[in-house]
Image (cartoon, rainbow, N blue to C red; front, side):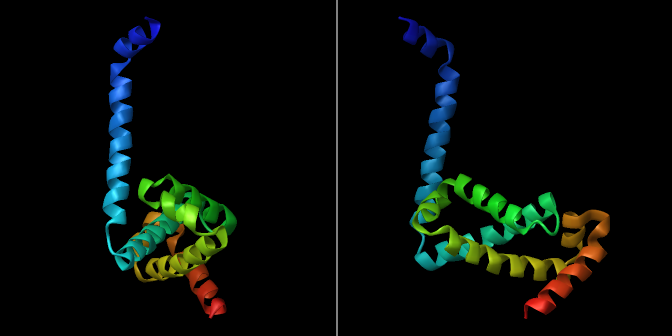
Length: 137
């Protein structure tokens, strides 16, 4: 009888959990039914967004921390959990490196985005990013 009392007292918790599970399954299903090329493109777009958000959160010169932050975010997305299982961390790191180069180019070309990420230090950070990209090439 105590289990039934718990269910009656906490029915809303069960409804919320069931809804979250159903939403996660639906999101994963919608993503997985896309053609592979569209899946790859969505992953690339998401990685660029995650790199920018990690840059905002951790700022510059924190490469490994940003990589770990992006990976943790990636694993938390229901539609991407399967990719996290299927690809190695090394391959993921390579994908993030490519996305980070794109994100840095976006920061250089879009001052509003740079100000969003770096605040008042935007111009100084843009100069630093330009030097990083020049030495990488």
